[in-house]
Length: 196
Image 1 (cartoon, rainbow, N blue to C red):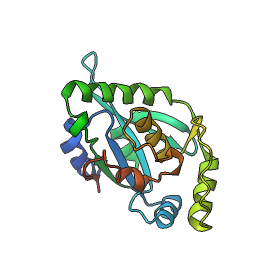
Image 2: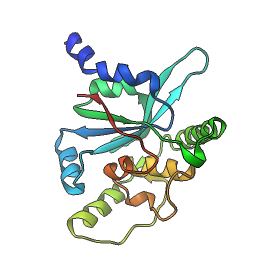
Image 3: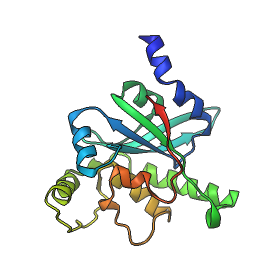
Image 4: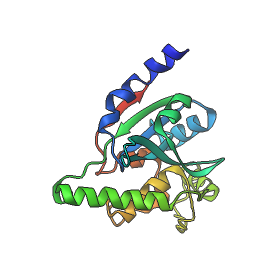
């Protein structure tokens, strides 16, 4: 069993040193809820989370900030999430190029992402957003709900933090994005499979 888990996390360990605050983890779960999300949204992905890296005081840990139905917004070690996860996962680096390209500017953006991410800890899961997504995709309802930012589904959480860091186009509504939409944002790099 230990050998199986070590092999399963091998790709994560290969990329771990490159992971930074603001990168995204995209997941493809195998449970019923995840399969429904993938089918309805016509996406490979059923869940996303935001990576947060702490390197202070001789500590070097990579965490994932995510919103889960039963727990709301929480932060936990990415290695633990991956070892417990029933599915596949991809790492998508945050691309800060072009006008955002200077090293000083990149650091400021990642610091803003970290601050905004930490401010969301403990918020509730947004069950109303799940109802909205169901009516949007199943009944073709185009009405976008008002954004509250007091509760989040996974993709809404990542989109909100990116929006507050000025990484999203102004016409996007954070409550209208799916996990697949997050992975397709212009600021996202190519996905690298880290959990098979």
